[in-house]
Image (cartoon, rainbow, N blue to C red; front, side, top):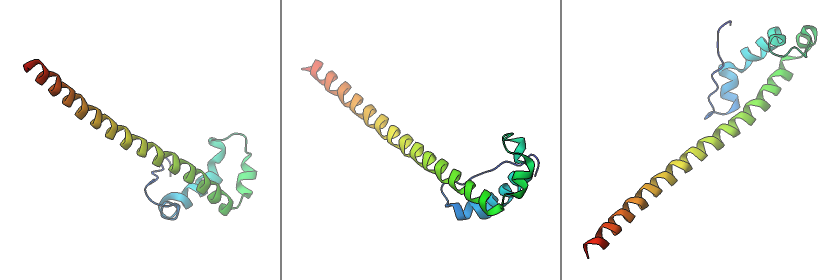
Length: 102
């Protein structure tokens, strides 16, 4: 409906997202898609089968999900690298301090 937002669950597969919001999104695209993409005429979207629109949504979802998962993996990797760098920095500080005591 008006004012609703898509809330994809990137951790879940397309089938679960389809059940949650995909069918409604496809119907909204069919009815109001020209508000977002003026290249398609309303009569073309109205004649486009919902299955075709759902298939296009599936392709988009899988692409975005892949990018999301890659980004999350990169975030986790960066956090681990920062943690390791902090530990190594502390070790270097201790070694430097101990070398001054000698």
